[in-house]
Image (cartoon, rainbow, N blue to C red; front, side, top):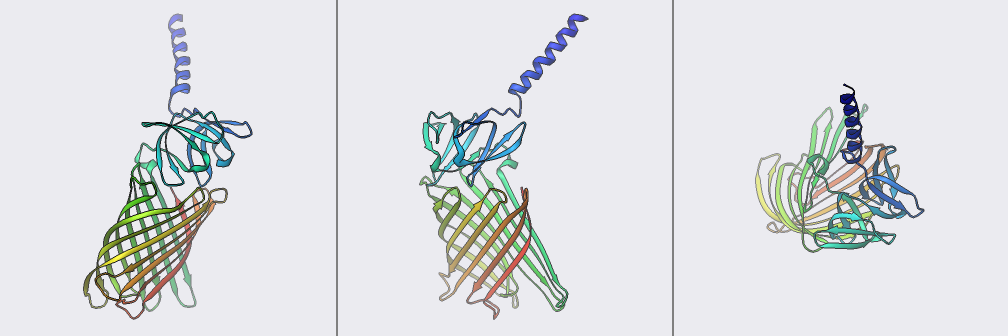
Length: 343
């Protein structure tokens, strides 16, 4: 009986030790700062100049990238360079401060910290690869009995070679006289090319706008894009392509098909120290190829300001123009404020 009891106690102690040393949640990454401090945990990401490290005793801590001298990790990472190149591998301890020693299938690479735009632990599950942002707002004016509901969303899924995104906007204005609505949903699939700063893109759009007399617009297209600026603080891209579209007028139901060019640009800048701020501007011009003299354009401006963790104050402004709209009005715009949530 005593022998069995000793055996059970020894087995329990050994099992606890083994679980603590090798089980799930093992945090063995080592981050060394320039002042000599060392943090042991699990390096999750470096984005916008901020490093997230998960620890057992202190939870997730954030450290500015410029304060880090060395990194050593057993996990697999994607490292995106400022010129657009991407590496996939493990980070070994570098003999020199301010450098990353990356090991991948092609060997070892010594990378300067100043050349790194982003570090992301390669996610193994679907939920770790997906990002969701949702913002909602509502306003009502008693004097005019005018109410407005807005919904903005952005969902993206990224793996080693592609980025797939869905962005949507819905604005509904209710008054005593009428109800007007406008909506837009964009789908995009981005594929990284062998050239470091370029990508291929396939897009699809669905759009409605009562103000412009548009019952529905469907478009499918593609093109090439390029990163003009890609740093720890900001990003600027541009793309050129073409798309085919089908439009249905709101009043007479007339259908029209055409082909148009697509010239798009997007600029983002952010600050991930508390409180987090994110500012983004998008603009696209659509000159018609098959319909002489017609051109369209649309743009969006978005500002997110973090109130508490994962909860944001959201301001979104948008505008759309069509010089040959079915209605007399050629320009429609909107401004919304609301609360956003990210996952």
